Image (cartoon, rainbow, N blue to C red; front, side, top):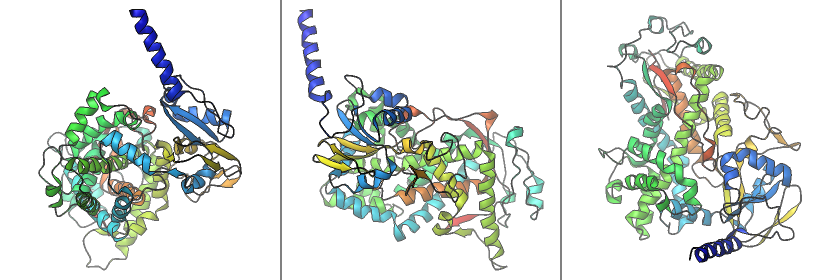
Length: 533
């Protein structure tokens, strides 16, 4: 009996392999990268995605096909061919979006193209200005909350020089951590008359990731959904559940059933404990994006479960902005020359604005979106973090057999039913494009151009995809978070701790750290209040 069962298993395995895994390369098709009989190249990709793709490019050229279980991806490794890939009519994003929506969040979006197009307008133009103002307010409230969080646990540190000498631009405060390499010698930010010196300025300790979740993620959450007294659908509960759920994201979007991952089920169960659409729409401070998308889905007869699933997709996207903010802060704190450069850029802008004020003008210094986007050091810091920490695929579904023409003139047959993809992190780590690609250089993108095969790259950083409607919004949030944080807080990493990218998450938009690190921080005395306009 055992022999018959064993024979049946072997026969079924061979049938599965022949039906889903085996492929004979047709004439004109890209080379096929060898992999495991069952899961293809999945283990190679998970162990070290960048090395695997660089080795594959070296061995097979600028276009090749890999396999994850039964799904094949033709990888376009030439950055100059990305634009042609995004324009190719045979390559369709809709099936990929549907795959993620159904496999990961268990819903189908009716009339998806129209909804995404119209909802996307709610994070652009005048809506962008409104949403950034609201984000700035929520962020300031979150900063105030964390700065008061441990006042009963830690002794206060008083720095007389910060409050008594407004003309002294040297920050001579004691380091929060005794580290000779991390002594902050940068210029102090401009003082103001907001009576911030009357507040307690206490040294506090937290995890950097926890700090960013309590401030950045909380501000984004309230900007999206508005405020309420809900004890479950609130920032920290959602943050912790997403942290668990994201561990299984790659497996789910590839089609593995969620029943295989009990912890993912537990996390998703909590994430789905959302207010009804009626209650959400009753909130006056609800974001324009969620208001429009919810009303659109209700008008098209979609269920409460569908609306919850869509809300989670939007939170999933914003969760990556939170991850970006963590790495931005980590690199600043671990590279004090970068910290000082940004601090000087921010303080210089504040000082200039203060000098141009009328003598009787008070209140926060106002930054415009244009001013934030035109800060060269800030922009370079954000771009360098994206370069080092991104992990997302740009994927399209091949809806018919297609002859795809590369930038160098070569044409390859791409098969119907496959996926075609660009993996930007492999391009971001290309030593021909970026000198010392594994090193952090905060000013790498200041007045610089980048080349591959002697030709300038139009977009050296590709992290949000060509179809992302909220790319500008996400980058602005990340930048404003840095400006606000460095203006309001002094912060140091404890005891020389370091954070490492968790490379097992390649395939996610932004990679998380392997573990959190401890920081010490305090609210600056006499900092100048700032806001967005």
